[in-house]
Amino acid sequence: MEKDRLLGRYRSLLVSVEPACLVAVSKTVDVGRIRVLLDAGHRVWGENRVQEAEQKWRGLRDEYKGIELHFIGHLQSNKVGKAFALFDVIESLDRESLARACAAEKARRGMCPRLWVQVNIGDEAQKGGVDVRAYDDFVAWVRGDLGLVVEGVMGIPPVGEDAGVYFERLAGLARGSAMRFVSMGMSGDYGQAIEKGATHVRLGSALFGARKG
Ligand SMILES: *Cc1c(COP(=O)(O)O)cnc(C)c1O
Image 1 (cartoon, protein in one colour):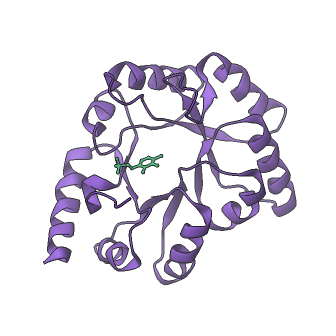
Image 2 (cartoon, rainbow, N blue to C red):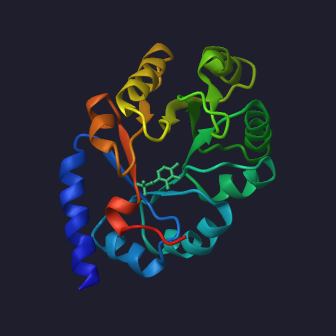
Image 3 (cartoon, rainbow, N blue to C red):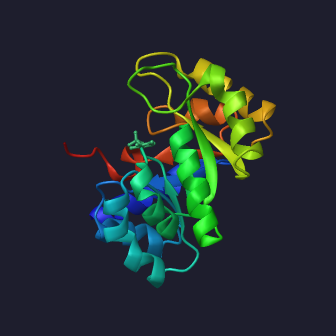
């Protein structure tokens, strides 16, 4: 049965990612399968699109207590209000304009989700994230000038390269800037990420199987 397979995968992954926290990435996953893990007690989840997350999680958040929802995608500045309303952690603070939008939204609401800085650890033109060379200045500016609390980093290594080097780089940046949380490692490379000090691994296909499309 599909449900038993999912639970089996979940339980063995939980053990193998220890001591890191498993962020279950539920993008494209239907509410039925999400409920299987919610009923098993899982509470930390990741989504990469605001609209999809709203549709699936508004109701689930009311129904299940203690959910911690992470935003892990590219956040458009005009969706910041919706993201503040739904997410507990925004892992993908990746540019100045978004940081300004977060500061403005925080002033409006008097609250702010936990913010982590996404770093472009592989220096790839097509990937989001703060440039490695600009990271220290960016963090100082966000903390000092904008007065935002940032307490973690997130990064994705380039495809087809030894991820370990990139994970080490990200963990080093986190240490140098007193970040408590290091989100790195996906289904294909989470073992290496944990070795290099990940506090959070973001797993989608290892849990739910390959995504279509
Ligand atoms: C989809 C996604 C994941 C999960 O990827 P898998 O390889 O399926 O585990 C992790 N992080 C981000 C930012 C993603 O978009």
